[in-house]
Structure formats: C-alpha cells, structure tokens
Image (tube, rainbow, N blue to C red; front, side):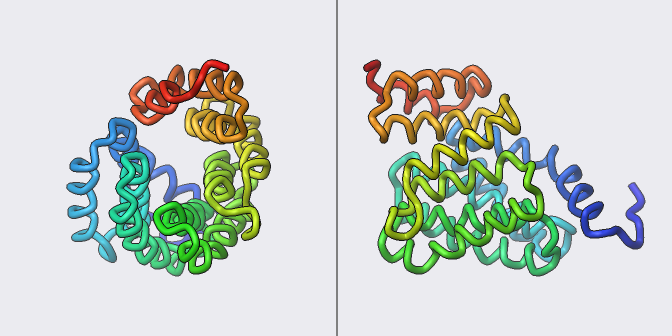
Length: 231
C-alpha cells in the first residue's frame, strides 16, 4: 500500500492504529493465554525492527506491556518491573515521534502504571505522575477511547489514595469504558477485580462472567472468577 507523503495528525493517528490492529491481535491472544514465551519471541523480533518501521517502537512497547501484565498475573513482580521499564523507553520514543497519537500515550501511561504493583512505594513515587499524566493525555486526544479509560482505571486501582488513586476512581473509569464499548472484555475483567476488592462479590462475579463470555480464552479472568466468593 502506498503511503501518502503527508497526513494531518488526526488522520495519521487513525492510519497508524488501523495498520497495527491486525498485528496486535496475535500479541493479545498470547496475553490472553498467558503465553509469555510467545510474547518474548515477539519482543525479540520487534527489537530488531525498532526505529526501522513506522510503528515498531509502539508495538515493542505494547508487547512489553502485555508481558508485564502476564508477569503481574503470575506474581512475578521483579520480571513485571523489568518488562514495564523496558517498554517505557520504547513508548517514549513512539510518543516523541508522533505526539498526537492517543494510543501511544495510553501505552506509555499503562507501562508506567505497571511498575507500581511490582514496587508500590518507589514505583508510585517514580512513575505515578507518568501513569496519570500520559493516560489523561490519551483521553484528551481521544475522549472516546474505551481502552484509555481501562488503563486509567487500572492505574487508579494500583495507585494508593494518597497519590490520587483508589478503588472508587477505578470503578468510574471502568464504567466509562463499558459505556463507550459494552463488548470490551478488559473493562469487565478489571471492574470485577475492583468490585471484589471493595467486597462487592456478587457484582464482581457478574462482571467477571461477562468478561469470560466476551473473551473465552482470557486465562486470568477465569482465575479471578474462581477466587471470587459467591457472596
């Protein structure tokens, strides 16, 4: 496909995200199956492409974010921190190259947020502002992006209230994401996790069951449902 010589920023953002969607689906499936080996293989390949292809830095950042997500799910906090910090560098390069692409800011903010559960106090001090500011920038650029609200909600879930986070704020973000896209399984998954932390177990199970219905391969959603009491 021939690339135009010039695109307006908004058009460029749409073109980049559309071009990446197919490639990112393989990463998402590996994330759903908790297949860290497959994502590690993708990371190695993308490291060779970084700086050579239009969205390689973004995709490398996204792959590291998915790997960090799996590591957090598997309680491997040290590895989660390594993946997240590695991805932050790539995400910053993507943002620097195309600062008007909301998705790039979202992934940068999510990666900053993923350092926090691995090292809560130091992570919040070092990356709390990045997690909040970058996702807020993504929402400013694209206020109808449901994934941005999920990312902000996850950040609020992990960010202690004294740093401006908390469960109530997280739930508002997940509800906003669902309002924008009622079929976004990730929003229901995190809503269920947040509701369980708030001791609202029946509602949590309903949200997790919806997440599994929408994404049957999502291993972590199944694990979260199993550990959620019925009452």
